[in-house]
Image (cartoon, rainbow, N blue to C red; front, side, top):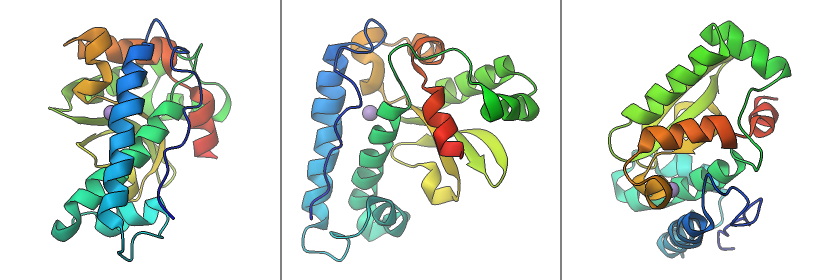
Length: 197
Ligand code: MN
């Protein structure tokens, strides 16, 4: 069975004006879709074709013969996770256990935001910023290109795509503005809380 592209959890225009329908036409409709097509072509008639996506990611990481498979499989997973990391009317602060854990780990929610902004802004070139659980500990991390926390034994709670294609139509070169808007207007803390459970 071929890998599919899960439907967006909202309409293309749902996150406007912070992320435009035009961005989703390209980012979901072209970039994400292409990773799915490429992955299916690369695993066709191999033993990975029928494995769960996360297994494909873990089995192909650091295997020089499977670099293309890893890159496309991880990008399929990362984008689906990213769409769910945002919602209309998102942003602001988490509540409950996650809020308490953020305060305990980072000292304050503002300090968490600073750490996340720094990770997302300093990922040189293409990549991702993450909030993860490592064991029982929260961490802010960044990964290059397609790499993600699943290959480092961490549990992802939320992510931000900082590839240029994620923000160029709406923010051009202003990655810091994109990061700030993600935190203030888009981040889906309900999703992060579910992932922590
Ligand atoms: Mn992307």
